[in-house]
Amino acid sequence: TKKKPLVVVTRRLPDVIETRMAELFDVRLNHDDAPMRQADLIEAVKTADVLVPTITDVIDSAVLAQAGPQLRLIANFGAGVDHIDVQQALARGVTVTNTPGVLTEDTADMTMALILAVARRIAEGARVVPDDEWTGWSPTWMLGRRITGKRLGIVGMGRIGQALARRARAFGLSIHYHNRRRVSAATEQALEATYWESLDQMLARMDIISVNCPHTPATYHLLSARRLKLLKPSAIIVNTARGEIIDETAMSRMLEANELSGAGLDVFEHAPAVNPRLLKLARANKVVLLPHLGSATIESRHDMGEKVILNIQTFMDGHRPPDRILPSML
Ligand code: 8YV
Image 1: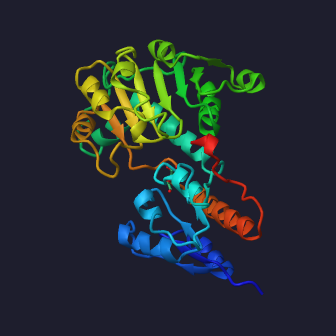
Image 2: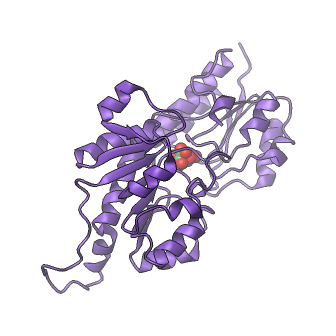
Image 3: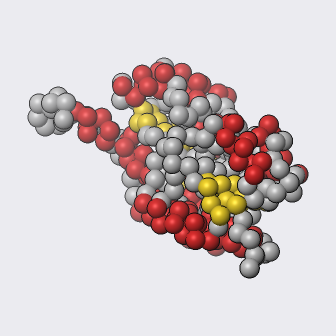
């Protein structure tokens, strides 16, 4: 019988997943309920055959430089891999996998929820009632903005962007998108989506912008101060992708100056730290802030764990794991 690979899991995962992993692998679990410290991460890459990190583990070149030759696979628990220096890992012969597909619908749901929350003032309303600030209905009380008939611009038309488009159509929004590559004519037709080759031109015409692309060197501050200025002052922005894709300081400034009407953010440039300006805007009900809940369902977490296991097993059997990160994706 083959020796079981040593698999180090950096964070507590759902019980059934950890149990299954313990049956299949020589597994080291971490039940600290806090992110791993860099020293522990370094210790892990020195000994593990397989590392299973999450978004809270920064696997940069300094960590990878300490990796032992036994480290063969980084099987990320999550779709985004911007916390991993994938280029460096690949250069060292370490395979990297992620968990796409299984969190698509939940993340699209949360994106739609943020659009509704901002446009219809749901978070504000949900505070007013328990705070006993509601004195009764009036025709002009807490008016939001209609979303039916408005234009939604999706930045990044991958799985999540497309799942958002399906939802948004049912809400009567017209669908527009910008992407590195145009999606197939069949997909465009099915989603009734209009492609904008120029992100700048799209931004100027939209009522709602949703960020749904991965964070890579090419998308860092894709919504720069200059591009944000192209938006209509009545526009709202939602982001369930990564904070780094938007220049958060520039966006905050514009929200403060009423040059943008609102924002719904599930992710932040320096998460878990949140820009104090955004906190202030949230208290003033200009923005809705969520603690990275995009894929936070029991079902997604379970399916993400299953994907991690499948990637490890396939790799250990000497085959190509289904969710390998390729240099072309970076
Ligand atoms: C996870 C996410 O919470 O998958 C992603 O990219 O942002 C979230 O679904 C997180 O990444 C888990 O590591």
